[in-house]
Amino acid sequence: MALISDRLSRFKPSLTVKISQIAREMTLSGQKVISLSSGEPDFDTPIHIKESAIEAINSGFTKYTQVDGIPDLKKAIINKFKNENKINYNADQITVGVGGKHVIYNLLMSTLNKHDEVIIPAPYWVSYPDMVNLAGGSVVIIETGMEDNFKISAEQLERSISKDTKWFVLNSPGNPTGAVYGKKELERIAKVLIKYPHVHILSDDIYEHIIYKENFYNILNVEPELYDRTFIVNGVSKAFSMTGWRIGYGAGNTKLIKAISKIQSQSTTNPSSISQVAAKFALESEKVFLDNWLKKFQNRKDKLINFFNSINGLKPFIPSGAFYLYVCCEGFINKKTANGKKICNDLDFAEYLLHDAKVAVVPGIAFGKSPFFRISYATSSEALHEACQKIKLSLDKINR
Image 1: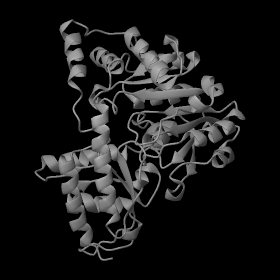
Image 2 (image 1 turned 90 degrees about the vertical axis):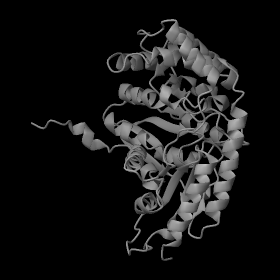
Image 3 (image 1 turned 120 degrees about the vertical axis):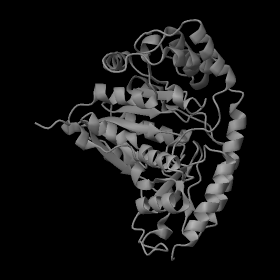
């Protein structure tokens, strides 16, 4: 009898986590590695948020809480949706988990049966397909390209819907591309979804506040009739630089929330009591720091776009949101390095940069779209400048 469950064969460990771990191990061995692989803002959590957590500790708020979130945090989330998104929810429509990933995992585990299909546009966040597979569902991929700004059309969506479709995943601003769906695009997609009442929408809004020039729209802002079929996931990790605090939240119909709470009651139980207080305070406070962060992200993005455009063989996609650059490396595929090794794909390309330039990036295959690689510019300008210099030196060695 095998010790390890068969379900683990349905997916692989996260490639982004794997590359970040390799970079950390190389650093521990004495090598200087610049990691551009993880989506973690380099800014510190704002001091007023940290102080609220310290106060919670000192006041003794260190015990178990309600399984899916304390009432005060749920109230703050309800107010956030009402004030920022013009969407109304009650407390029994809110769930709080250990990060946005945890909330999505709970959702899929509590809703998917064998043969249920989940439509996912590619490129996609690495964990979507694997969580669907783990939950026993089937993944249906819609391919997009740089020529259509990595966004699906309403026609593509309709062609992908079957009688077994249960969820459609909508991530805007998106990871890894930073693509943002505009109001008109969402209206066209919503018209399709209205025609298929058995299809539910998973709206991943985690990068909602990391957006440049364009306005953010949730699909419910353009089609309120989808309210009962839409589940929104968000969190405090990106907009408040609180990745390590591990607080994500979701909003949807009461039946879904109860199912998610049931799953969570037998797994993690409640998120950290202290983190919940900090998240409540973050959501209730003015985001005065965010304008400064966005200006820095914009400046870094512009410099990186100029840099990658200057290298023959690379072509960056210009993002409208998030803090990633998705770069086409087609010009380096099937080329040879100085030691004669052939670069066959974007995984080889990423491994070459890691070991030769000592710069960690994530290959496009992790996101379902090759030949690309993703870098995160949620790190210091100094580190990005040094990384660019190292990348250029390494790429100059390749026989093109």
